[in-house]
Image 1: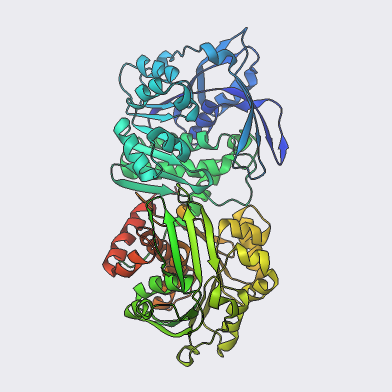
Image 2 (image 1 turned 90 degrees about the vertical axis):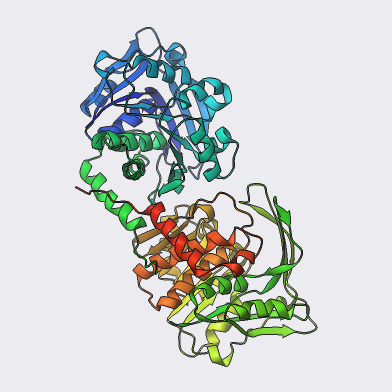
Length: 308
Length: 308
């Protein structure tokens, strides 16, 4: 089992869906990634920043899942990053209502000494300069670096983002972002172009339509589990990434065949995340539930057919 | 191997995509379904109607693939059904430019005597009264009746459509149509409601995002093959249905496990259909190519993972 370092936001979210709305609750990419990866019992830590307004109990909830938060800097006279969004009726699209960067605006990440020898590095969605800052602090290149990013950084900091993309092994982005980054509509062509930018593995997330894993000319598909009800999609993409890297770190195996299992794990974890508001479901989730649902993924996709 | 009767349109299509446009070419639901099913060497026949303007050579092209066209009535002084459409740049949406029903407006289907004992019946997209007319002519209920329909009939002839739906075993519709028919956004809930309308099996087609097969509380997912280029999506849904029923008829097995293989076959055949304009690819397709691509479907979805 390998050590896992996660960089990303730790935040307040306020969410409105057709089923209700929340006050400021625990959110952020690093939060969802770490909660998801924690299901695999890996030794993980977060690099992030919060303000003096961030409840100690929130960090304790992460610690309770075995997540090291020594790398979460607390700026006592600053305010925590705050995001607020409202989902449309179909839950497939949303409006961002508020994005207050607050302490995130001037964030200088510092990797705790105990994670300088991390074997796995997960760069959650964040300013690419921060992601690069973390890469540069780690003396021995990790066994695997995974990057998650989004269209905002393609629009505003493309040059810096491209420098990060050149240094990583796996990128996870959604289908529209893959099209934007590559200029190709076909996801097969998009993945090929993105390969050439650096990452050996390209994971394209399609939400309720599953995820594609590209490796050279090979491709693997992990479906999303068809759900009766999606309650709150917030954090599903981060939870997918956390399930992916958590499984890799647990098994300590970066082969293509193991990556297939990792995207299935990511899809599995994400299917739980959307069942309740915010991080609620991820915090009461048990490994037995994950294992049981894995069986559903097998039943969903496995078939025997004669090739003759 | 069972006998297969297909009812549906045989038509002229004129198609425009970002890659070019065609004059009036061979089209229609029954055409695509039968060409697809013919890959499995089943004994199939079409019930349809064309006008005196329909080239004999078009019917001969179907006959050349072993498709019986005795049930295709020719109205010498009538004109063949004509559809014309233009695809948008992403090929995921299209505008219908022309729909001339012509001889289809007063179509009274007549099942040829040699198909009155058909074991498999495929009701392609058509007026539900015509579909019902065919069901009623067959004295011994077929082993399996599959229905394909679309939103147009839900909008305009819902009562008649519901009567047909009550009499069939398998329905194939797309995701938006499943939502419209059921009034449920969640496809899991939609399938459950549609089950209660009659069909034991509900197949929900999601285009480039694959297809779901629902059977009681079980669900199976067939992905679409990620393609470098989609040239012309016309007929892909019908080709999927043809690959589904063709595989069932060939294997003469209507178990859930065989239905899984059938949706994979449907997805496999549809992946070829979109590679060229109209029926072109379906007419030069060989069984070796289908078998080879089936291996790609296995590689795309099959994984081994420890449940422990």
